[in-house]
Image (cartoon, rainbow, N blue to C red; front, top):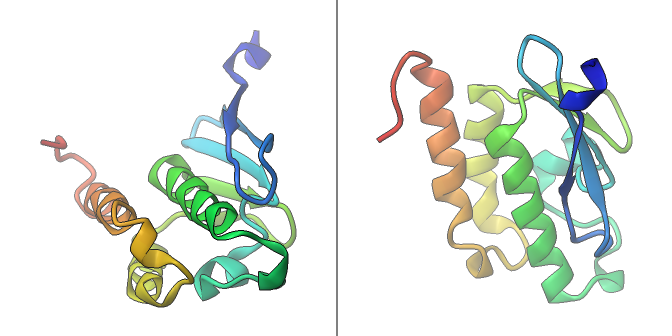
Length: 129
């Protein structure tokens, strides 16, 4: 039935065992992220609200989880705040801000991941090489 398309994706960072709920709504993939993505404002800021409560490893894991969400989701339902679509405009803003993120240098793969998704969104018919 329709629930067979539900799956859980690991999104560690905020908490080690955190999972996102993923399903298709016919218009793409919907990712219910819980606190892996607090809200769009938090995402665009690439910053922690409570930086002293997280280890470097947890922050790096969070950025990797965020990258996983952005590389795959069409619609994000964050832990707090309104749902939002993953668009080329959003990805461009995130790519511009990421170098200022805490410990961005420990996630060198993230800009490439976001750039690949951006190219996919800008050229929908194009096959990824």
